[in-house]
Length: 278
Image (cartoon, rainbow, N blue to C red; front, top):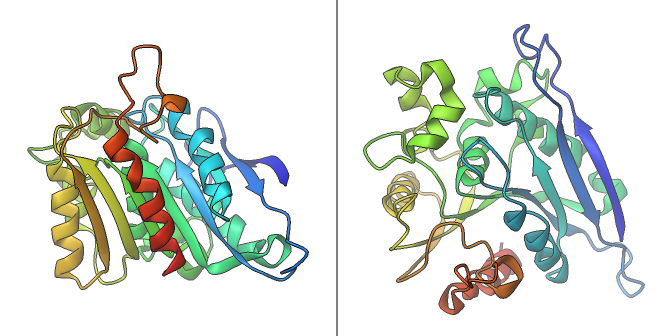
């Protein structure tokens, strides 16, 4: 397996003359080809950890990547810009990351039609933003890229932040929008239930009904919007579990066992099947 870290730089010109605090980074885990199938192309999954656009949860990064590798996927953990570098800078960085992976598809044996964005909590908002905005000029034009270069082919979202409306996670939008957090037009723009459409890729979605940080209504609003536009959705709502479960195993839990939720552990094999029949 090949591992490396690639910096993702947004220039001041691309950022509208704003200098970002720090570059984003893409931590790559590229599987070696198998001797019995040396030309087999694999899906690539870009993982966006959560953290309310204020920090990044390591529990939702490398532990998820190792599981995806065991499923036969190339995995990439994406460390994106955080507050005060808000919208649309994380979205621009993720667009560049997708373009970077797609441009190396032949070299790394990546299936260029199975480049998946995955995210948890606020990272789910970031991943879903690409599904909503990849064909919007404000995203591709500053990067001087064709929209098809930054298009995600699918989304795997865990307890995602979706809406800036009544069911919002207030902290995520405060960090994402900063001084624009009370601007109704901006809040509408980043409420992704209003922005997805027929162009949005097929989606695998899971949440718990007892999530008291990001209400399950976020996922329900997204699923309703996607199905209204004819987008394929697989959704799983688990009856119990706190926010931030990640894999819901001991691997991602502290000594108190708070994040161990056996019934939620099925999301990963379900996602594996979803990818196999993509």
